[in-house]
Image (cartoon, rainbow, N blue to C red):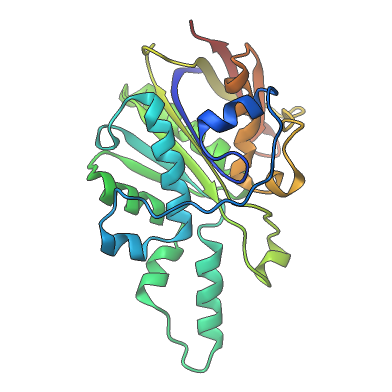
Length: 264
C-alpha cells in the first residue's frame, strides 16, 4: 500500500460548486440541491485563450483552482494528473456533425479541444507550469486510474501532485450511447509526507474485487452517471473526517482501496 496525505480538495458541479459549499452536503449536514452549473472561463488565462477554452477545460480548471486554495501551493509548483473518460463530448459531437456535412471541414480549435488531455494543456498555459503532467483515460474507472497514477507519482518522485478528474454530458444523439447526466469535476492535492493542514492520511493499493463503496444517499442518479463522480464516496469520507475504507471499482477482478485516517 502507498501512503499519501490529502492536503487539498476541489469540486465543481451542480449543487456542489466548491469544496466549502459541498463539504457539509457530503458530510450529511446540509441538504443537496440540484442547481444549474456552468464554470466560468478561467481568469488565469489570457483573453485569447479564454475565448478558445473548452467546457471540459473550464470544468477541470475550476476544480483544480478550488483544490489549491486549501493546499496552499501555487499552480506552477505541483505536478498534475488529469483524468477523463471521454474528453469533451460537446466538441466531439460538433466534429462529427462537421464531418457528416457537405464541406467536411473541422475547426482546428475544435480539434485540439476535443482530446481528453486538452485541460492539461490549458492548465500548463494558465499556470506556466513546466512540471510533469499526465493525462489518463480509463472509461468509467478514470478517477480510480488517475488516483493510482497520482499516488504512484507522489510515492516515487517524493513530491506533491494534483489529480483532476472531470467529465461532461454528451449531447444527443451521442447521449443515447453514452448517457452522462450532469457535468462534474473533482480534484485532490496529495503529498508523500505529512503536511500542515492535511485532511487525511490515505493508504492506497489494489485488492481483489468485492462490493464497492456506495454513493452518498443525497447524490441524484443524474450525477451518479458521471464517471468523475465516482470520486464522491471518497470525497464524502474526506468531508466527514472519518476513519473508513473506500473501495472503488478498478477492473473486473480488482478494486482500488483507500484506507483513510483523519489527521489532527
